Amino acid sequence: MKTSVKTLLTGTAVAVAMASLTPAALADDKKIMLKVPVAFSTNLPSLGSPIVKVADQLKLVSNNTLRMKVYEPGKLVAPFEILDSVSRGKVNAGFTLAGYWAGKIPASPMFSSVPFGPEASEYLAWIYYGNGLKLYQEMYDQAGYNVHVVPCGITPPETSGWFSKPIEKPEDLEGLRMRFFGLGGKVMEKLGVSTSLLPGSEIFPALEKGAIDATEFSIPSVDKNIGFHKIVKYNYFPGWHQQATLAELLINKDTWNEMSESQQAQLNQVCKASVADSLAQGEAEQFAILQENVEKRGVVIKKWSPEMLSTFKSAWDEVVAEESANDPFFAKVWEDLSEFREGYKVWGENAFLPR
Image (tube, rainbow, N blue to C red; front, side, top):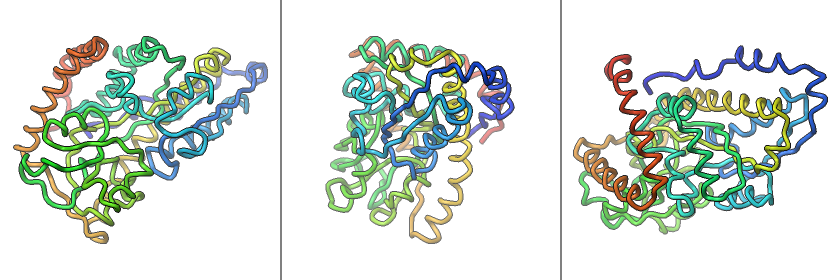
């Protein structure tokens, strides 16, 4: 990771923002309970755990007028049903990834992670200070979903996958059955991989039963908790498909509109704090996990060769062209992000130390 996002939101900024909300103003706010099903177990660090901290902090900063009840995956709503459930009002909020809606909204994975970057700092710059967040909400509005979206967490680069044998050349991928997320899955399919998008709770059993041969899921600390190392030992890097992964809090738009301006500000600021915190936690924990994987769990860390990365990139270029041709809104988002990244390039190439 090139840089931290420490300027995004600090504790001082939160304190200043909340200082303007007087006890009298808070007391006038209507009490709202957000029932929040989540797509990931809350014991998964930087992925599922952020929403628990958000719930705790939201209760404090709102003087108990905004509360959350968090439901583990499948306890109230199945992970892949969260968007529809929030939109219809079956529940009034949900914590998930936009990329899960690729079958309904082709552009949605662009607001989770983009193959071959951007990394977290550049991604957040586009989201918050480019047109990213505006396009993000426009996407849901245009598709007819009655939701308001708030970015509420982000993870650093993922591992590129767990395999039972080394992958030395593109031909070694042909015929593999692999769990894969987002636009990277379309890249893998071009290389002969049969992909499936399984929720986190179903991946280990699928590996164990031989229903899939390989998987990717998240950052090392998350993958360790799921236990992929018990079945497949070759862990590949870099995670070209997910250099940063943005999490979303979806709120039923009617519920959002019921909130006062101060409550909306509280939720926005607590989620911005969650973005900074989840990234910091993710960056802090991974090196120890990688060391333990090698020394205690028998994991073999592998780096993709330049040939393999070039192969992935060429397939990604094909995917982008096809998706843009098939969906006008995907093309709109891709054009905007590409324009932002082209401008950012002069900063990125000059400001940071060479790797």
